[in-house]
Image 1 (spheres, helix red, strand yellow):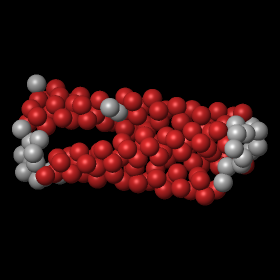
Image 2 (cartoon, helix red, strand yellow):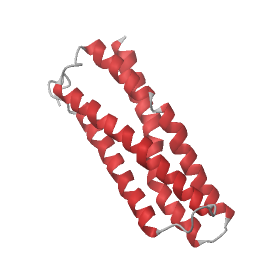
Image 3 (spheres, rainbow, N blue to C red):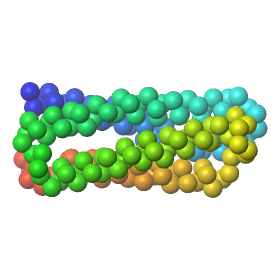
Length: 155
C-alpha cells in the first residue's frame, strides 16, 4: 500500500504542481504582452487561460499533501524533521498561491478588462517575483523529498 500511496503522491505532484508552476511563471509576461498589444483579444485570452490553468491545477494540487500525509504515515516518518520542514514549506507555497498569486492574477486580468486602470509594470514584476518564490519553495520541497535524511535509497 505504501508504494501505491507514494506513486499517487509523486504523480499528483508532477501532474498538478508542474502546470501551476509553469502557467504562473508565464502569466506576468502574458499580461505584459496583452497590455502592449492593446485591446487584442488573443493576448488577453492567453492570460486568462494561464490563470484558469493555475486555478484548476491548484485545486487538483490538494491531492499532493493528502497523499503525502498518507504516505508519510504509512512509512512512519510523520515526526521526522525533514518532513516537518517540507510540510511547512508546502503550506507556505500553498498560502502564497492562494493568498497572493491567484488574487494578483485576477487583479491584473481585471485591469486588462478595463476595470481599475492600466496594468503597471511594477504589478507584473511583483507577481513574477512572488511566482519565483513559489517555484523556489516547491524546488526545495522536491529536493527534501528526494534527498531526505535517513533515506533508505542511499542518496
